[in-house]
Image 1: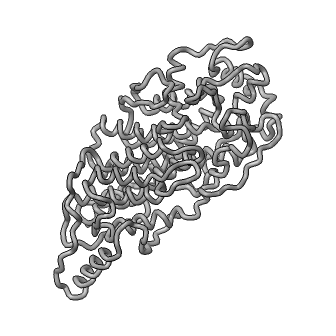
Image 2: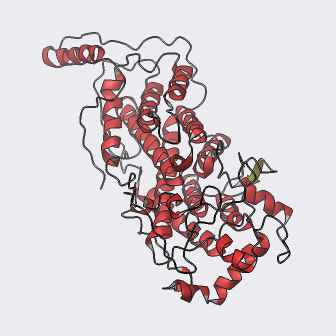
Image 3: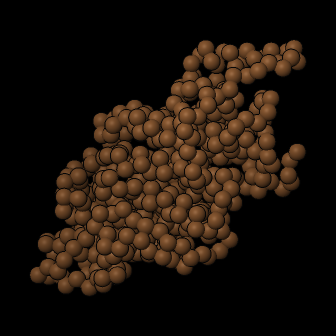
Amino acid sequence: MKENNDRPLPRVRRTWRHRVAALGSALALAVTGTVVALPQPAAAAAPNYDGDPTQYWNQVLVDVFRQLNGPDAAPGRLARAAAMMNAAIFDAETMYRDQWRTRLYQPYLQAGRYFSLGETDHEEERVIGRTAYNILLDLFGTATLHSPSMTNLLDQRFTHRFGTSPTDFDYLDLQVVSSVVQRMRQFRSDDHSADSTVYTPSPERGAWRPTGDPSCTTAQNAVTPNWGRVKPFSMTSGSQFRRPTPEQAITYDQLLQTTEYQRQVDLVRRFGGAADTAKTKLERTTSQTAAALFWANDVDDTYRPVGQLLVHTGQVARQLNVTSPYENARLYTLVSLALADAAIAAWDTKYETRIDLWRPESAIREIDPDWRPLSVDRNGNHFSPCFPSWVSGHATFAGAWAGIMTRFFDGNATFTVDTEDPSAPVKSKTFTSFAQAAQENAQSRLWLGVHYPWDADDGMAIGDAIANHVFTNELTELPTTPR
């Protein structure tokens, strides 16, 4: 259940002198009824409010993703950050709507009116931007073992948007931003996202093991093995939408002896390899190769799979003329909540079920030692992502994204989206439905040589179930218009 605590926030980067002055003025008005002028935000030197504010801050978030490395760039961590930022933006926007406009939807955690003598310049822009900035500063303002601090990047993007420093006083920090950021911080505290319990894979044949790629040499390299235990954003648990194990197998030996397992291994061997070998002739078409690489984005300096879908959300919103900041905030929040829970559900399946399935690469190299997947890093090393195969994270994300987009836009649409994978020969693609894009995304993992077909099919099913749950239960339309 979501928490609705509302404690003072000491984290917002403003001076206590300004805080006390603003709070004193507000108290004087409440007690005496005398109108006291509140401190106003510093005049923007060169504001640049081009485009939608939520889209802008999601572009900043994706820029952060491009600079993260190692476990900092794990899919679950990126999706969690997107959900925290966008849900906080939506709650801040809802407070603005409560105060000055008409609220149409329920908030994610909590909203409500705030004290003000009158709407000030660009208040909606400031409410969204200052909330986004402080959430991102919370998440990425400190350097880690793998990634630098993003404070300078965030400060630069804030100043580019507002023309002022993020440390300049704005009374909206006291009135809106502090409470929204603190609620989100408290809601996600102790959510098990920092669980570093060591993962020990089964020694059985068929169980996941490191593939020997440069970034996957030992079991300790397994990426976020405990992410399936993270507290969901909307689901009741990470296992809420679990699928039956492949072929409903209870043991690895039982699964590996099935005809379907052998068929799927053979499919990946023939369609997912990097090149012909003495034992395997590659059957993948040119268009399948292009699709495999279009959806990859697994390497450093790209926006990663989560970032790609956030970018696609903005591209679709612009192409389909979503111009309201309120609607953009709702769209991004629904997408981000679904992606965050998709990561939790996918990792629950990968690590918390009876079958932590080995990658096709491990199975195929028993048959053909020279076989390598098409998937390749910037140094030319062919690799499989360093975690179990079933289910596909890409496919689960794709199903969640398409499920939200189809429901939000009430059906199909034609749209064009892009890729940042450095190996992709096709940099943009046009689709005639969200389901079509998601299906290609899921299927591409087979052509990339890193997943079996059931990884894609079950991931898509889980993702769509999550999308339906999120769209039905979060940010729902109000039955009547308040006030």
